[in-house]
Image (tube, rainbow, N blue to C red; front, side, top):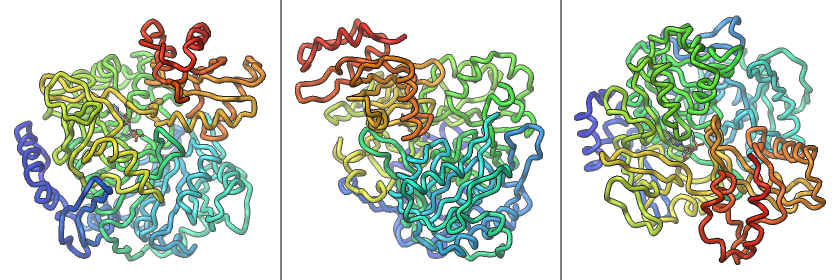
Length: 632
Ligand code: WT7
């Protein structure tokens, strides 16, 4: 494999090289993989369509590079360690050799149920090794996986299944999360009742042994189908630009969109970024606490680590079960070297007190990572002092479902870190800040809109089934640029600090919510006339959801609030439940009838003294009544 970036000078050299000759730079990275047919051209692109292609003409299979390629040198090395939800239960470990055999068995099982190249498979599973086996099995035979986070509701699941026209759903009987056992097969059953007409098979892994409802015509037990399959399965050779996976994510408008990633570019960048961001060295134990339902889990639990031949830990449970020391206990137990988590988890554990990490040595740690939302200074300092004991570099990594991999981050031990700054772009990533008119801002010590002006291998190629939406959302705001939707600040040294979304996307505990999506869910309640959702600062979640609701019969009681929460849980899932619900008589609107969220955001954040000019509103008088009813 190519050498890791080794120093600040080396980073600067790599970065300069990647800008001067992107094709040459990525060609070298790509050539270390196994190709069934070498690529002819490294990159072709235009951001107007958009049309982005990498490693054109090549054929490969990501599982060959994740698994087969490593067998000779590290067949008996552990690929995945697995820690169960219950601390006392036995752990599991899969070597590269056993993982390959299991993936092949599962791949043959998918084939036995008629799944072929290009078919879509929705995966709705707990954090168990079979989840990674299922994903890799899809990739083995060229099926396109679409993981749906197991916290989403039956309605949300069936929407995604229908959009992707998936032929199969892979799930478990129950998920275990702390003290709760969640009946996920029952959610799949409900989703099947709501839609999912394309689904021919529901493959069910027996995770807890509890009773489930069974339909003989579609349901198949994993243990009845997978173990009896051959452990050999020839990989499907995929064109570089064939689909690898779809991952649904929320946007400012409409339903969640299916972000499409393709085989070769995603492979090259997830490996490159994993190795360099975590400075992974042979023998290290790496742990990312994300759920595979999000892009972080795809790139930095499964693909990146396996491509790099790493040993990666997967954890089934939650940070606070059985107590708030669980993460730190696991770090000591496995002697974790690189630990990667979200600011929400850090803040939640920080709130439980310093005595929890103090019980553990934590001295195996070499890198601490943060991802998913801005990390505030207090959380950064706590992470630094109480987990890193002041001597472990923190990497505040910025990326998105759409970017496939980490684009802005310090490199541990290499970049001089500064709290709350994601710092500098990775080699190959040409970030720029622009103003509202799309003019580049070249000075430092400024704020602007974060854009990227050159393609990178793991960028999204389209939004599934709706290319125009992809163009509209990401490529139409500013000509020739990919617009991230984030605002950023650049300091005097050129470091970037991500401020957060400038569109109608809200980041709650690192989970992305679209205002329109949550509003549509609330509006499903028959007594709701109209609603508006905004984000407001929340001590643990980063942002909380604040709902303003106009009701028909003004039954302003807690039972009605409860019904609204239920509607949201049913339509999207518990993660989208508003933290506060204020009943209002009207919503401030522009003359053209658009809700003025800027004003609602200020009120929710208790900055009502600083609303700016409201005289141009259609209904300025409504503002005071909203302020009068604001919730603490
Ligand atoms: C949005 C993307 C990155 C994988 C998980 C979330 C926010 C992400 C950071 C960070 C500040 C961050 C951005 C981004 N975000 N990482 N280090 N600092 N903000 O992926 O669900 O697609 O959300 O998360 O606002 O646009 P996602």
